[in-house]
Amino acid sequence: MAASRHPRAPLDRVEVLCATLDRPDLVDRDTAKEAVRRDVAADELGDLLEAGCLEQADAERMVAVLVQAVTSQRDRDVQEAGLNALSHAVVRYRIPYALLGPIADVTAVLHPRELTYVPFILSAAHEPAARAAVEPLLRHPDAEVRAEAAQAIDELDAVAASAAEGTANSAARAGNSR
Image (cartoon, rainbow, N blue to C red):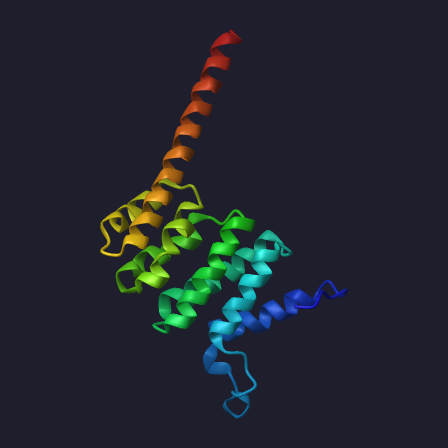
């Protein structure tokens, strides 16, 4: 996408793309051939998220729309594009688990191709609740899903260990200052 000098231009495009994903019923049937396909809209949102050019609040709003698209659609192309976009979001922004958590509710209906994104996305929030959503994927029949789940659990364990170490160090410093 070409860079724009107008600071509002990317946000205007975000509005159009989010509306395409969020409210497909509003797409004018006469211009549907010119309208952006929902999977392409999710891909373009992913490009914007990957660029890291948005304010946190705008990124979170986009994440909410993408999560809604992933959890409410049965179109695999839309799901995969949405999950790919979410994987970019969690790398560039600190996305709260509360926004990402609904993805855990659809793991049973996702195809393994789409499901491989889920452990990374959920674990990126570094919340203990992600573990409960990711652990069942360790027993998934697909080897790639299991491998992604194992990596996500390792990440969650490392974050928990680091947090525990930080707490222990803080307590030790507090004890030494007395």
